[in-house]
Length: 396
Image (tube, rainbow, N blue to C red; front, side):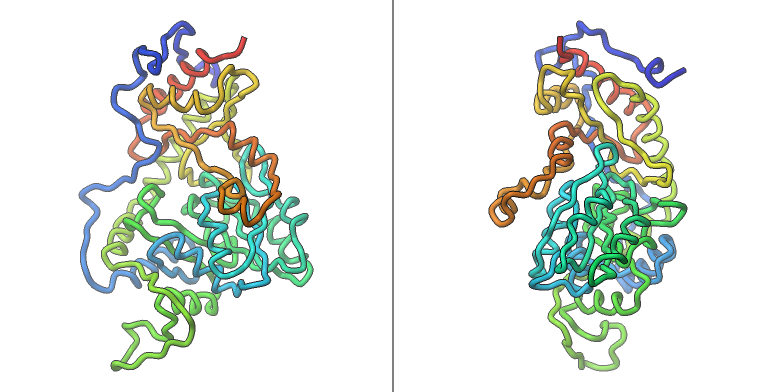
């Protein structure tokens, strides 16, 4: 049975819930939800180093340095890379603002490169075209959990004038993913994770940087701890030396304990997310009114969230109308992301930026629910609601 044949379509005459009709679901289905149960525990003690060792072992990285948030980890990575005033770093517009903000935090300037329309990942050829003599780093983003093309990006970074450039992977969505059989955490000079509650693995709030470089790891550890040269556990007396300007970006032991407990079950989290994503892709294959994500042959995504792009040329309404109609049906759709360069702060400081593919994708994007505690019946509800709403709003 084909994907199109396997879908259960609502009748075209069904009245939308937003117009007073019966919703697909009575209980609202959120777009993301962390899987926490009685296996997870909170404690005190030296849990951060233990969690870091476990995280490094899982990813295959030599070092894992935990931070208080993903944003703090991004800040630490840009600082460890030596970015500063006069430097530029290239990133994608299709990301949360923290990616670009971390470049601004260290006094450097973010530049943007456009994305592929199917995967919404940064295009290596667009990165190459954006490089200037001031470029010092690349910050690709693994959108929705699919890794960027790090092989092509490494070639671009190594061939850059004044290169090689440092690659800082924003892997906030992709813990557990692989590209060409290699694990996220081993594909870039530094790999940044977010451990926010909506992510694949959580520490409550937190982040981490993965790296094989002893030098980067040392810089990162100092940066998260006020620039102090020695960690508390390594001190023999009361003395310490601040050798860099750093921040209080430490992860709590409570958060690390939760992270360790979550790591024990991450393989089951990932397996379930992949099952749900595969069900979405089967059900949405060949859809006339929306486009599902494109998955590249080299990638095994972690599926932080699912998304679709509406075929607005076949609908008589815009994305906003579809969004509100789906919410009324009990489906917790969202939109990820407003392109960074379209936020007022960036428009004022970096005027004239045009990213046509990212802008077009944003106008069509909807994030759909995907988290490990969902059932295939939940996915079927989402698809039924998508069918109901888009069929009702079909043009012509």
